[in-house]
Length: 320
Image (cartoon, rainbow, N blue to C red; front, side, top):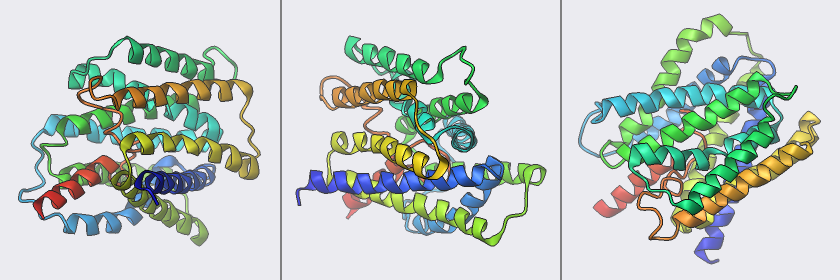
């Protein structure tokens, strides 16, 4: 099987698992606070990530070389996690994905001041068109606009900020630093907030928390395999397959049907995002390639970013 096809299939499987992960988040979110769900998901995910950290042979300690950027990225991941989980809990799956898919547009915008990215007229136009798509989904002033929409938009903004910061400092910081700080922030900060929102959980719901951690971990490994097998420009658009799963799961499990404006807005956002990815793949267009190099879903701090894990693997391959 050709490597690009294999990478695309790995990615499609990964994002199907991510979509199933989000279904479990939505189900639990109807009964428990996002704080409680994230805290215990991180708790179950820590052993898996610890195994990864034990394989990091890079000399150094856990003190960040860029403390301020690391702090901003850690706070951004914390905000993204709570916002995204709340959005999944309260909004239809398709609407949540449509808003989160604005991330490539926001990454490109944030890369201008943070990375010094130069955005030409074509990508600039794609950003504007994509933001129109976001407005169509949000329908400002409409009766249906709710806190969940604001949460999804907040998650898209802060996830994009976290992605751009990783792109800025990723070559200087140890992978262990980039991996552990967001997870520990979730564990400590949400642990302090937990007593105020905690509700006892039956054993089957505790098992679902384990599924969230396991599915996130397995899907992450599959995305890493996809990027190692295929070109980034092939793998990156595969994330939009989650919209198909959102429609299927939303209808079959939650009795949701995306309305016409959500479908139209999502189509515009997805088309703009794909165009930006294709433009970045042209060598003379973008020196930083902030969208292609982010290679992750929204940064919730539950699992390491795909870009960080790939950089670790590439560094280890070069050392060998």
